Length: 344
Image (cartoon, rainbow, N blue to C red; front, side, top):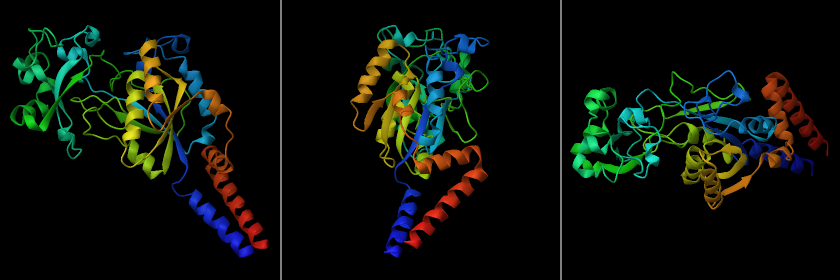
């Protein structure tokens, strides 16, 4: 009997330490560049693409008091180079001009292939073949705009501007929203004034000048994956708690790609009061859309604060603050449990 209970205990401990039932808190783009300018950031100017989002910072901080519930915490970071494809200024266009009734800027992108950086690119369709775009109906760069002169840095080494001209079957059509110059690597791309820990894992996106990246999992062309999926898999994560900015863009794309992952099979909990949209209407509709996705549930920070930390999570949580104490405490607990089982 004693040996049976001991074996069962050891089996349970082994399976607990494997890949089952682990969760991650994923904070999407909670950065200075996406914040408005309330008292919280009184000494800073508004973000370069600031939205009404500062109210979620205290909510996220309250969630971080329950880090014992999460095996890892991941923070995505929009991290653009100058002249990025998503900047209106790159194309001689005003920021948000995609909202003027013509939609986004038509672009032609290389189809997903091997995940090569060389294939992660999109070219303005008007540069490839202006006859393909009706600029009275679609958003186009001004007639006076010459990419090779006004923005040679964007065109010169853009593989899509070559490949999609010579191999059109290797490419697909898309549209690109026109944003302000935002979250630049040399600008205000740093994280918002919120709880951050040395154990937090940072995943950068949008670093490629030629393609945008809304999702924390991959770029918009589907060519380049970030480290997020691999990191989640390495840590045995199967449940994601997702919050961040903006609900109707990067958060929604991240949730969608979590469900599309061929390796993860993730369950997603969207923390609705810890996300902020570009607009109230966009937020509301996106929450409805995500709630309708199979594998997604919506919760609030109050639900998280009402949870109890599992014993194993408490030990891990303690070890984050004091690694030595955490290891010794976990080892002592394990030895005591084994001894108790052996004595039965």
